[in-house]
Image (tube, rainbow, N blue to C red; front, side, top):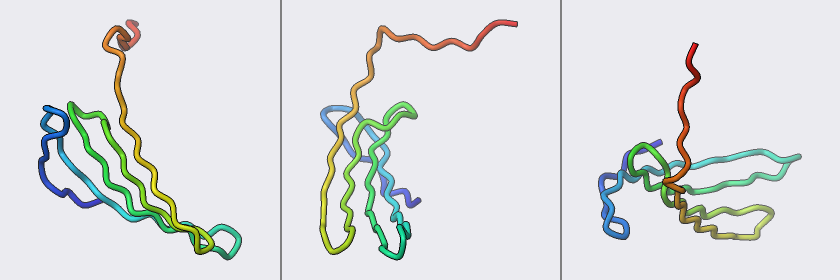
Length: 76
């Protein structure tokens, strides 16, 4: 994983990271270039450029969190 710096995303300051993922699936290689934007410790956007069996794909995912959901550690 490589830190790419800070970037404004829709008015929110984010930290940007990138990495390459390579997986062997029964002799065929799947390679993906991933770029991830993180705000407040959570991913808020992913861009994935991949290739499998000579077919290229691009996936973009924008992530929105529901602020009404609260997660608390259990008390003992």
